[in-house]
Length: 408
Image 1: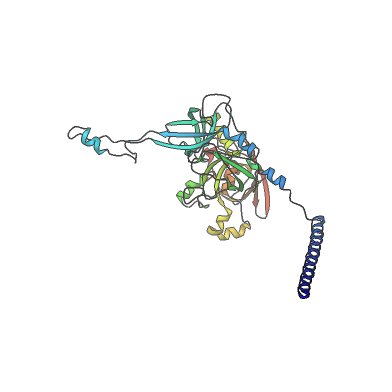
Image 2: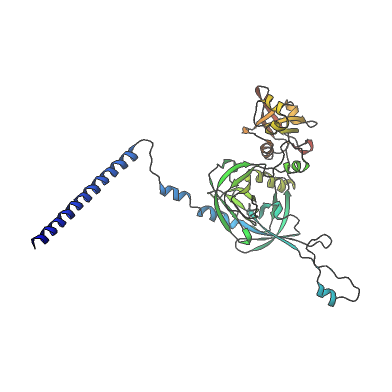
């Protein structure tokens, strides 16, 4: 009996000792943790994360509400060409039962129907989209977000930028205001609004991955290949985003978090035909100039410097001695002039390298074309060139495309 009491007493003592050690350890660790917190958050250079602000900045409901009703679904229809249409088919039942002896059958051909997106940019029904969305269309139909259908008229289009302007009759249409695509920064949130796979009013979000993206077609900056020279005619200064864009989104809106139009979605980079993380939009700074000219003149009024150029970076491969002599890694090298060239008239010389236009740095031919696309013939710009070891600044009055030589 006495032995049992001794065992019970020992068990109680061990339990009390274990409990005391546990409580003491917990108290010590809690005190240490509080001291550590105090040191971390009271030290200079350490700041607590404001999760409320982060969550607020990722609420895109306002931007979506401002833009979704101004993005339309475009249906383009092309009449069949019985002579050249590749989708012609022969109906054997019609041949055997619908014709007399020896009579040749008539081919059946289906009309081509394409789909895309467009953006209403004015309350009186002007709509901007991609040229390739309505390419070759005999009829264009607009379906608004509230399921109203309108026939559309093609006002004009521009091959170099892949922009087209449409018009529907009516008034008081919801329109998206123009934003400032030049103010976009890498990492900034944007929304893509369109009709992928015929799914109306689809909104996706992403960030600006890059601006001024060019050379998407792999063109030779030296201009040696005819195919590459043809691709070089495209004005490329795309906004690259990771907002999901798929077939049907072409011509849709890229908007900032204020619901302002900053670009027109135009293409994706994909080996499958579907979105894999890379989408591209035409900056609204270029779109504004194009649609303004189309509306006013029926065609785009392009300004040129009247020069033939080569990317400095391309000289490294094709003219290494000249590249080393220039002591530059980027810019556009002037190799020749057109007759009555405004650049030559202003004092620019062969061998000069253009490095800036109106304060915007010029790294290559694509950036030069993109900057010039903002101006009209007769406007004056400030051009900085490097000549030898120094720089010179010239004010040039731009001419029209009839003075064009080689690639500018």
